[in-house]
Amino acid sequence: MTTRLGLALNLALGMTVVAATAGEARAQVIAEPAPPPFPDPKKFAKGPFASGEVGALAYVGRAGKYTSPGVAFGVRLGYDLFRWLDVQAHVLGASSDASTPPPQVGQSFQTYLYAGEIRLKLQIHRFQLFAEGGAALAQVSTNVLEEVGVTHGSNFTFAVVGGGGLDYHTLNRHFSVGLGADYVWLASFTGGHAISADVYLRYTR
Amino acid sequence: MRAGLLVLALAACGCNDPVYLQDNGPLETAPAQGMMGGGFAPATGLYVLPVRQPTKTERQALGQLQQQLMLPDQVPWAQAKDFDIELEWSVKNVDTTPATVIVALDGGNEFGDYVPGNYIDPNANEEDQAPPPDLLTSPPLVIPPGATQTGVFREDDLQESALDLEAITRFPSGGDALATPFMVIEHRSNVSQIGLEGIPPHDVTPAHVRYAFTVSADAHVVMDYNVRVRDHNGKLAKPTDKNLYVNDAATVMPPVAPPMP
Image (cartoon, rainbow over all chains, first blue to last red; front, top):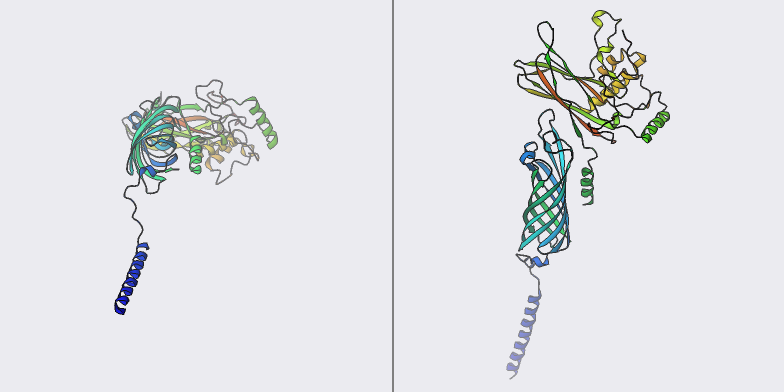
């Protein structure tokens, strides 16, 4: 009788110990949880954003005949109105070499673009395809292209910008990087066409 | 971000951007008339920088500056520090034989011109009666038939020629108008002040604004040029503007001229 009671007590004690020990083991953190393979785009930051870009601008057509491609820097400031639509202000500056006939050799000039744009977006997980376009005021810094008949008395012109690209969102909800390319039509410059391509880093608040 | 925007804004304001002014037409050497054995006469041409007239207030300020600096002569309106000027030129040999070419630049400031031929000392021995050098010259260029060669008179060259002109046209060294060109043109002012002793302290140097080109060649050549100007104080006008400041006569007599023979 005493033996049976002892066995029952021992069994109860053992089960209690096992149960208690097993509970403690489940509570231990043994590894960081793996990040989700595709962050939820709904959790990406949205609202005001700023992006900085670096790339190149190349004139094509008649203007391209007398200029070389040059390095370009730009800034965009904007706002995500919806998940699929942004409005943005875009300032771009590029430095190019002029290849005009003698005696005007070895000269360079800068191109500035002050644009208002909209961006249409299609989000696919971490990737985003976008198309953008707008109107701009374009300026060349000198009249170096006047002798070859590209500019005509004014260094300013109305311009139209259109292009697109690919955006890749980082695991940080605020940052994304991307590639973009734009076509620029310079209305009052003869043969005034240009293409810009850039990489950018974007911060959304 | 703010710094980047500031840099872009400064770049966009175009404070220091040059303006390119086209020439008045190419200079072309032509066969010399009545020269023994042929040869080609030098081609010459004058370009006058389009400088706007000063306003009434600006004229008064110039007068006040003259008094303030205690200068004996008028303060120039077109000052050397107002402009950085570069002259770019090209010479094409349109002949069938190689050409040896020299491009020379003289001209003047708003007060008067330097014409080397006027500075020959009539009292010197005949073999010493040589004109002083041109303000700026290219080295002799040998250009094959059909080829084009380019060159430039740089901004620092034009600043130096402006200083040389000031000594020659207004403040000759020791009052010796004939000797001063020989002294100042042969020396760079950053190395030697020879010939510049007559310029008063605190003087305001007038800009070299009249460009008299001479192209000498032993063949038929055509020279084109243009004027690249960085206008620091908004004094440059359009070439088509009327009533410009700098005299565009063929020659302007300087205040201190060499004695006539």
